Amino acid sequence: MERDLSRKKVDAIYELREAAEQKVLAEQRLSRAPSSEARDALLEARLTLESKTQDAIDVCHECGQPHLPGSGHS
View 1 (cartoon, one colour):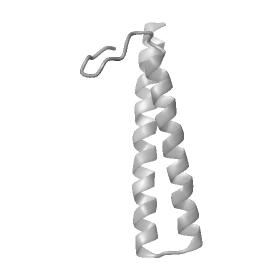
View 2: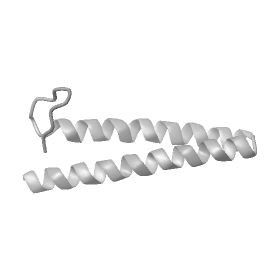
View 3: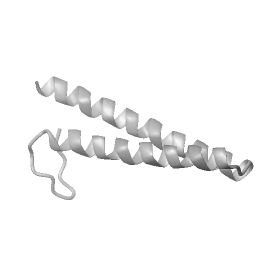
């Protein structure tokens, strides 16, 4: 079970990273060529990033260990 949890954490981190990269790309597209489609794409990217951030938080909290600032855990 711990191995499954570790894998879920890794997957969540990679998905979060991908969402952050997509948001940056959407911001760049909007700044280069403003349009309603570019604004919609940025909004979608922001919502996806927010969702993936919450997913990563949820997976991290599944370990059941206390989460204190500056304390690491697996």
